Length: 140
Image (cartoon, rainbow, N blue to C red):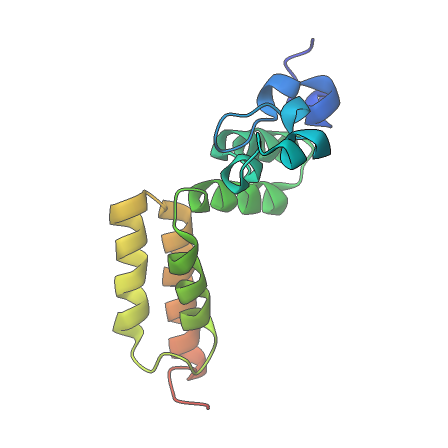
């Protein structure tokens, strides 16, 4: 097998050892039969950070840097609890937060507690844009 990441796509066919769930379950075990038997739980169907990083490498090698950055941010979010993700999403909606310090604190928490540096940088960028565009005001 070549080491050029472009030739790994699709992972399920060309590099199934990289197509594992967050729990470490290989893709070939994620079947309807396994789910119905109870041998596959909800945690077993979440994508792993490692798989997302491989996808990022594939995208970047194909010249799709923006897609690669999205996969890398997704890889960071695997470790973040869903309630924190949803709360952060709600905070990022214009007009939901009136104080930029609240979003800056969220970015710092994601950096500190989850190592989500790219996500935190995205939030920091949002703070700058929202400030410039006057979006830190109550809209609803």
